[in-house]
Length: 553
Image (cartoon, rainbow, N blue to C red):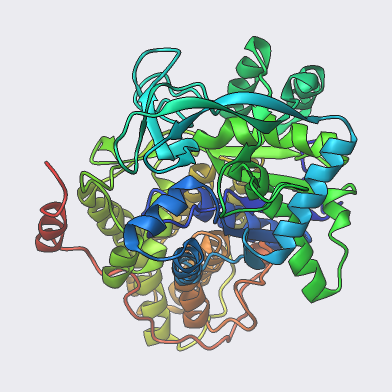
């Protein structure tokens, strides 16, 4: 069911795809989290009861392999990177109500409860399958412990995915010509019992579910194609020590794509326990559930996850919002090739709000976003500094210097019309999950403020006769109203910078709590102004040249 954003009706739960904590955060990760935070902040300005959760995805073979390579335990590795991601999100002002971990006891318990429910309802069954086994290492080789040849396209592949060819998910035992990734030996196939989720039983349910699912078209369309073609049962157990134990088996853990999305439920439980609320309002009730994810995990969130929820007797998502991927200088983001921009290093040089702005304003949410230091420089210098920063600094400085407070002029009706139209455009952007449209609308309003101020030349008017002084005061108060409205509209995108604008205007209260309708409330005559400071320093050519030199050509 499409969430009604214009009128608060039912509580809303917004989640983000969980970061996989086997390495540091780079800007490619942020394509999901920043837009989701913008969405949540606008919803709160509209009076919605919103819960915003996320957490670290801590299990699976890649984490075990990374831990082994570093000579540490998986637990120590995930604790280190869990802390890292949590700190990065805080620095970026991403306003999660709770940030959990899938290795927490709550998630272990909830995962086992859901798996037991699936077993009881007849949706999980045992099957003997042939798996790659390394005689030298004396162990079965789950997922990325094994490499070989894709059985569908013949390309080099990992044990769980044809990452170099057709991109298909590979079930345990499907890979051809298996080789142990640890010791390099050729592996053999041996038979072992594993457990499967009967995904094939949910075809009719999923076709109906996708018809009513809200969110972005790329998520629905991709999922529909998979459901129409073929639904294969999923092997949901792995030969690992690290993870959530499969009920009744000490030698198997559940597949990471079982316990990871269940984190959404367990994190809601943890937050509800802290706030004395009932998590069932979302997961067993009629609260709206909205998932923000990357396009690479659409299958898991639009097919596997809702089927698992349905089979266990839980509520299913109302919307799945899938973002496009991130490239660097037009090339795929690659940590191994050095084509990556690390978030921590970015934040050591630039303000978090400039990155938030770039990620939201660059392109449509579902399209590929390319990051380059040259384009970043252009966005900061030509938009944030030249349009928004210029408006704020120039107009408030003028008003502060000449009046010291908001002057007693009449605000133009055309200004209120422009603000109303901007608010409507923002609501439409939210309904369409098009956050660039939200930014563009607010920046157009700022551009209007610059035009009014420049064309009216209040610096001449305030030095002329009484009538011209009145006109000058009206121009200044009208543009201050535009700045107030722009601060409210852009707070979800640049919360820290807009907080400063709120202070420059001498506004009472908190811009983060200011409702969207406050943009149309007249700025008070006589309200004391503060001398503004430069909000957006320009990015120099020398800085960009240095940063570009660190990326591969």
